[in-house]
Length: 352
Ligand SMILES: Cc1cc2nc3c(=O)[nH]c(=O)nc-3n(C[C@H](O)[C@H](O)[C@H](O)COP(=O)(O)O)c2cc1C
Image (cartoon, rainbow, N blue to C red; front, side, top):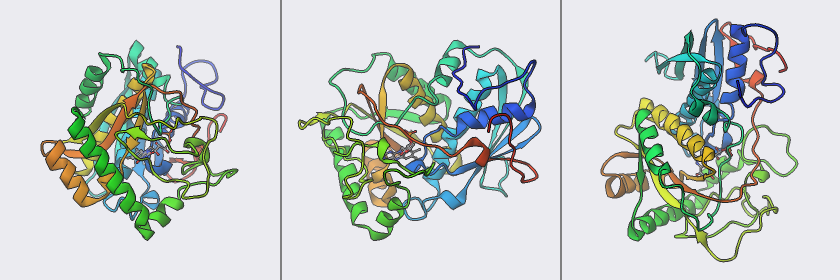
């Protein structure tokens, strides 16, 4: 079938996989979705031919993300990945997003009754799920493939979001300044800094969540205009030394913003699905993406960006796209630790 599988994520045994095997396979892929500070704010419950995705409020960033917006974007990315994993098996997912108003942390119910072979592009997207990494820094001075932008924009639309390309030196500079202003404000905010530090792992840590030092460079790279990254190491000199960042500023790449018409949990889940579709589509084309949510964690800056750069639509994520050599390595919790049977027991199947 050409599915990119690894030991532990493979379906084994003769004949059709059981529903439990399918659930385990899907979750093993979904955990590789991006999430804010790699909080992985999700868990799954399986009940026959239905998988439920739940937001884990215990992993919400109470300071940076009091409304749970970024938590829901992260869950949306996991939902898209789960749907894609089902497609890779030839299952047709039926998805109900936020199905129960009385249970706001139940992000989605996904079932699969029908079968249809996966399209080639679905297989290719799926093949990038574990390979894709968040990029931090500048890009090579190489334009991204010309038809990629149109593909990203139509993809975002399908998920109920919009990808706006920030064109013009003036607008790019304004957005970069908003990122820098936010980054400085956040670094000076003690509560925020403490929360970020709790999601950063020191070298040698065996943690399977949070941002490990292998995920960012020890020496931050400057871009033109300057889009500063998060200060994960906070003066500890942690970070990867492998890449040798250039002293001269590098390209900031193509700058975009993922926006939604509304700003309710459904919009956040949509934005998350659109985000993961865009990241995987880029990965197929050898294009890396850098994510900046700093200015969207400050209410006034977010409102400024909404009114000045987004025609009143709600900005959900700032993105930069480009070509770069990527060395980042990330971590994830085991699928078995986030998958439960509906009765609350761990569902351990196959190799987990
Ligand atoms: C809602 C959201 C916000 C994010 N914000 C940032 C950010 O501001 N800076 C950053 O470097 N990465 C950001 N990320 C990327 C995560 O840090 C990244 O997905 C996580 O560490 C896992 O690493 P991976 O994407 O390489 O697998 C964000 C991701 C999501 C889903």
